Amino acid sequence: MERHIVQYRGGVTLLGGGAVEAADLHAALALAPALVAADGGGDRALAFGLMPEAVIGDMDSLSPAGAAAIGPARLHRIAEQDSTDFGKCLTHVGARFFIGLGFTGLRLDHTLAALSDLAQRPDRAVVLISEDELIFRAPPEIALDLPLGERLSLFPFGPASGTAEGLRWPIEGLNFTPAGRVGTSNEVSGPVRLCLAGEMLVLLPKRHLAGVLAALGLR
Image: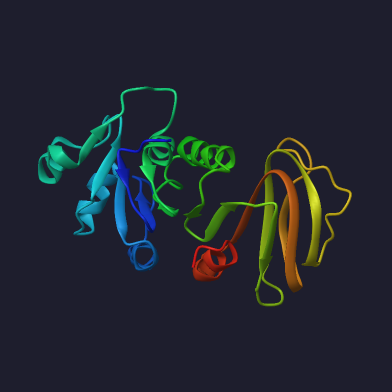
């Protein structure tokens, strides 16, 4: 059985040190009330007036003042350098699902690394909130209730293919790859049902957070 540093029965909000809007953080906490910070995300939590229940990471970004305010009992240093702090959280925190903020924006390399972590972890139910969008790894099948004309993008992080209903531009017969065919800026034309194989990320406007969690069976 996999052992975790901290374990929660419900949803966890993971907070990184990247771009975060207060309204998005409060929306995430309303759905996933346990707050866990990834390294320097501990400073970000304190700046919002929040105390994280745990801080996970190699602790190269958390400030000394932040570490002192949070206290040693909540700090969990993972020294290995083969994974990102976001990846460390996904490995060492047990939860039904995760909503991640502060893992995109500011530094492009950190954003790409977070998306790579997301694509590599089909065993974790994770929705990332970026400045404008929600990002999640597509399960084999998902149905989404979205308004007509809404933007829906598909981005592969490896070979991927599938079928779709309710999209303006069909994807049947397409072979997606990161360095080849991608599926940005499609549009909703009816009830959406995706059947996908491979490492595919779905991107939607962030106002659909509650609906995406419901579609993933997490609400």
